[in-house]
Amino acid sequence: MITIEDIKTLFDDLRADSEWNVDGPLTWGYYFTDTDSERLQPLSAHLCENGYHFVELYATEDNRRYFLHLERVERLRPETVLNRHRSMEEKAAEFGVEAFDGLDVDGPPPPPAKT
Image (tube, rainbow, N blue to C red; front, side):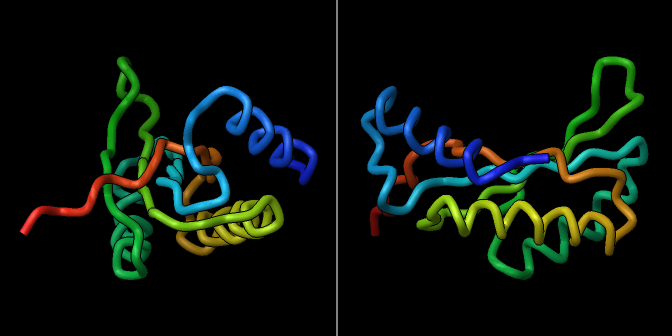
């Protein structure tokens, strides 16, 4: 179970070990796992309809477990990260997915597209 202290440590480590603006928008990665890739697809579609970006759906080497990776650029604080973690656990349960495997900072937001 993730705690607010774990999340505050993540933010402190990011401030100390990266040049990222931790107080601004970051690319957050969200990970789900299941033994059946088919169960991950409706959850992925739902979250993509709600502003998340599909990154990949991949299997372990033995094809016994599948992982769904989504991203979203947003500005989060430790308390909102904790709330988001809990809501993703609820979404996994709602869609019958075995587990929300956690979230992490994937990096700074991508540069704006050139027009």
